[in-house]
Length: 87
Image (cartoon, rainbow, N blue to C red; front, side):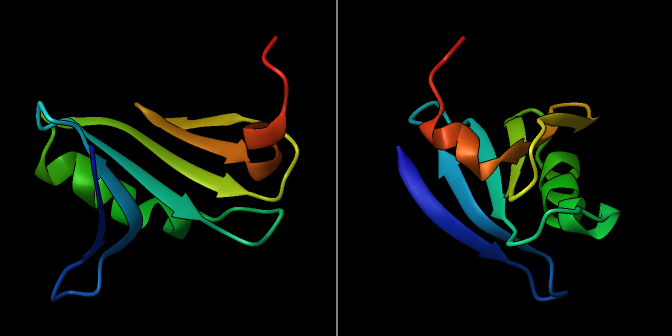
């Protein structure tokens, strides 16, 4: 597993990109707010559209309370879920 930060010459950013040995990618954004905006998924959507065969999942961690689907393979997830017990 490798960990990267992505920033293009056009200013598109993804905080963390995790790459598997097989070349699969997971994008992670971290936001310090309770409400998300469509712009918060800009980098993840760019990554998904640029490398669709390798893109597995995009997650935006935020300080809200609910996990929400935000598009195909895109999720908003409360950062508190990292410390929650699984169901």
